[in-house]
Image (cartoon, rainbow, N blue to C red; front, side):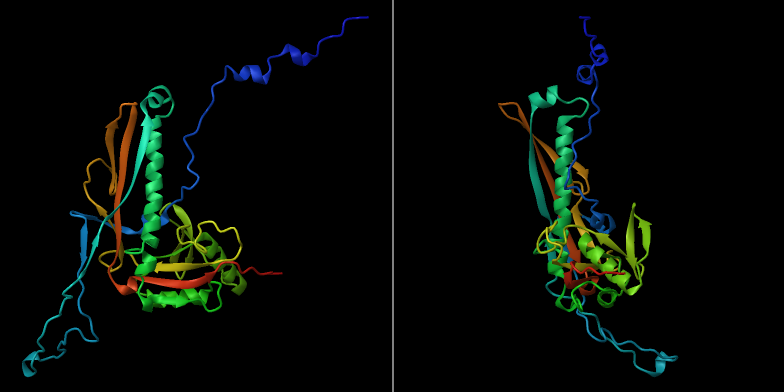
Length: 317
């Protein structure tokens, strides 16, 4: 019998064999929990010299100081007086959000091409600290926006889902130059459905490097740090959350972020990276600290829409 010819496939270089000589294009480590952190981009920050910020306020009334309005002040006695300050103003102290990164120097010496292992570890740790910072600005019990909002600045939704009427009511609480709404993406989607249902879809605008829904000209910033039923990513379609409206800026008597200026090993705003040394086993250690806090300068700088239901859906046909 004639010899069977070998298949053509066996006469060419296989993919598996070629792979051994091929270069592999690699990415940097991908941090799945990374978010845009729009809040810290839109919020005004102030540097502190000593880590302490005192909020001096005036004792306000209906008429803090009588004044005279007259064409001829000589014929009428000009009112006299002064504006009293609070005797015990509130003071805020920066807190530290810290972590330690350990890297085996043998690993960093041998496996640092094309990416530096120590640099990548520190970069990921910095992103983690900044994510925690944004969460603390919103949720910290002592200085967070949710806990710091005054009782008179809190409103509840009319029917659960966030409607245009609800956001308009929130604007009445922060009507002096409001800067932005802050909401979980699920809450923003719920608000969008309510607007669509009423035939008033909100417009969008590009600012600070992103596209945002606007209501009454005020951008609605997404964040997963305003939890739904206490979670960033709830599994259920329904759930409750809050929506914030914030005025930012020290000159506007709004909300400002605080950080320590000129910290040793400063990498960015209030962020310090310090080398702690190498132990007997060749492990290099780095201390990362982020010093931060938040100040609400006036009660009407923050409003909270509570009991926001995110699970209402409609058939538009």
